[in-house]
Image 1 (cartoon, helix red, strand yellow):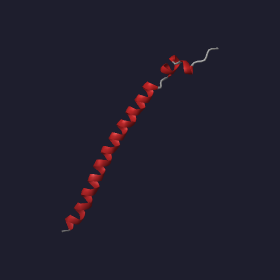
Image 2 (cartoon, rainbow, N blue to C red):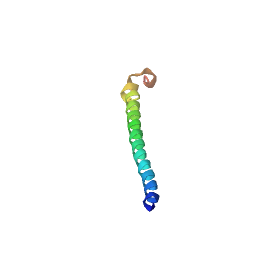
Image 3 (cartoon, helix red, strand yellow):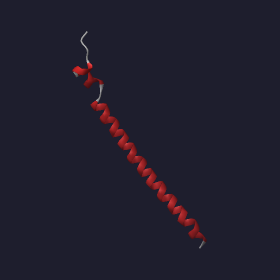
Length: 57
């Protein structure tokens, strides 16, 4: 009966750690993909060819 008192919190902790690591991996992927998309869409090369960002001296 004593093993049950220790087993239930251990299982809950293991499940929490598992899903926390899974969520961190997904969040890192989304952050990386969002950063790459931002880099592609608003890079300096794209802005240099746009007339709104260039001035005639």
